[in-house]
Amino acid sequence: MAVRPFMPVLYDNRTDFTTLSVLQPAIPYLMQCDGLAWSVGVYGWFDTMRIHIPRVHPAAAYWFLEQTLGRMTKLRLYGATLWEGLVWEVSALLPGCTLTRSLADMANKVYVEYSLDETSTNSVSSASQDTTLQGIYGVKEYYVAGGTRGSTDAGYLADRYLASHKHPPTIRSMTDRARGLAEVTIDCKGYYNTLAWKYYTSTATGTQATGTTLSDINTSCGAFIASTNLAATGRTAAKRFAQRQTAWEQMLSLIALGTSNDLRYFLGVKAGRVLTGWEEPTTLSYIKYPQLPGQYFDATGNFPLQFWQVEPGKWVRAQLSVSDNLPVSDENPRAMLIGSCEYDAVARTVKPNYNIRTPTVSSATASAGQEFNPFERPWTTYEWYKQGYRTFYYKGQWITQYRRGWEEYGTHKDDPWQGTKTW
Image 1 (cartoon, rainbow, N blue to C red):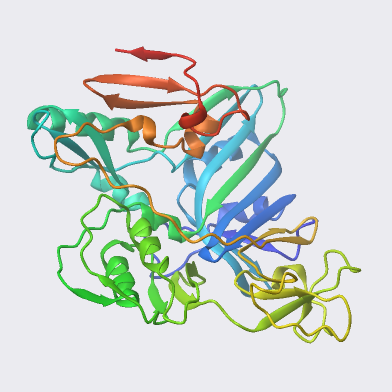
Image 2 (cartoon, rainbow, N blue to C red; image 1 turned 135 degrees about the vertical axis):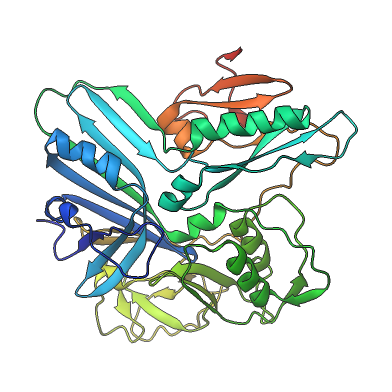
């Protein structure tokens, strides 16, 4: 096949990684994949991977929908791990219809934040949770904006939200595919995404090294992280986190401080589920000759690299002549630090992205006594591309907001209402 010798592997493991076990029924289908692409970035490291299997029996497609979601996956090459994460979404193109299941909107531990009246301090309901599904997929928390209501009604709302979101939902759409075989697309995400499944708060006073605080956050929320390897940043920050933000958002707020050398600090979950933090390098790693499109060489310029050997977080210089030895820095326009890479196993190409933006975090929740405004929340990919609408509880009623168009509008801020309904 065109993607060999690259080999994606699925594992039985979802939340227990004591002994890794390969998901045997998936092997013959994965060996037939005709599409394999993945991405890696300095913030998060292993980001996405997509596997396309062109021809499977419809019964096998249903099996992938039901059995593979949330499982560990790796991309292997000659015994090395090029990518690692979990199955995030599975789509099956079947005769007459397409079925898609995703972890995007799943929530199995739900709280409702509410206020008794317009001036009272916000309160949080007890957690409504499903421990059975937590054992299968891991704990994924969600806070529902409850507006003004009583504590009993807040508990009811938490129960209702849990009932409709505890299972990964199945999205259906009709297609013109005729009778015959099906095809399957498996979308995976790196384990750093699971750090956005839990919310971190700390009432500790004082300051400490940001690397230590990163470790503290991981200890509290990193259920899928096996270990840490966090280089010191030389920066300190307050220990206290009182805003309603996820563990990953809190981590981004810390690494945005950079290092005491005034360099950027990168963070991601690398192979072996190791949360790794490191300072941006100051030395050259790769050379690219403009007269040789798509090819990269080592820092000496003598040894060509395979496309999958080019990694983010490295300096690359466009070499115009043999004597060109300008230093690597942001002042040299032909020296650039790679922020992320997109790889394609079929085309055998790497596409570096040289734009690195300092991490930003979302705003905190509303202050005491204020209503939440869900219209300020950007659309998720799942809501925008797969579902086409989003539903939320606002000022005592359920509201459904529909997206308008596929390309013209990206978030609600630029999105005129196509229609709403209440019930």
